[in-house]
Image 1: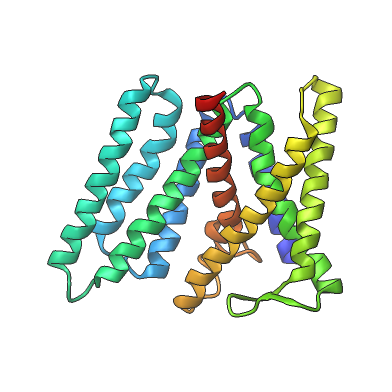
Image 2: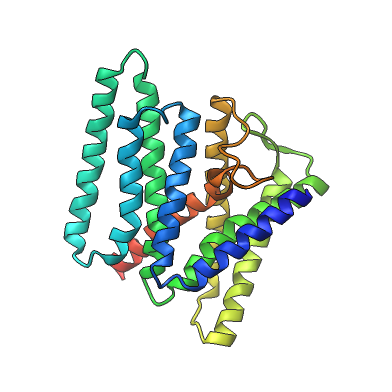
Length: 275
């Protein structure tokens, strides 16, 4: 437990400057770097890491995407680039399956394609949400706080009061009581955070919407966590990596954040289109 706490503190000390200076190039650099590390971990889990035809194209797109979403002002061109990347990557995966069909089953390339696109889209969403509105920094901090607060309170409440297993086949230690406590505490923390921001920085908040968003993000974060746990169980690994002692790899720490980032980005796009 001590190792886990120290590791979390060190990670937080690294993350805080990125969040504080998120309007600078530091954010796309950090998201690109963590996206590449996450892809490396996922490809290792799926046993496709050594196939450079599979891994390298995704590394390149992961490095390019956070910068493109921030600095490409022509949105039509940006959308065309992303559409082309999705198609080209699919073609590369199919080509790899054709020429390596005895060593690389189609199921592996399909899993690599699906999970890699998900990871890239999620880390790109981090930058998109930050730049999408004048509340971008508020939403960015919420993006990380919601799943991590949920995870922390779900763990401690589940350990203390948990009696009913949530989905034991996927994650034996998670409980219904812990999950509910995580949702409630996440919502309360978001409302408290919004209240502080409104009092100090004059942020205009709709607390009813924020409460609903707190519940949604907490649930989505837990689903994202469980989804990554399913993959680990299927491939019989405990952690995706060892970059964070006591926590595992980048994917082990950011699994819930990935899902939350995509949902927040989708919400921002919806508001932008229909507002």
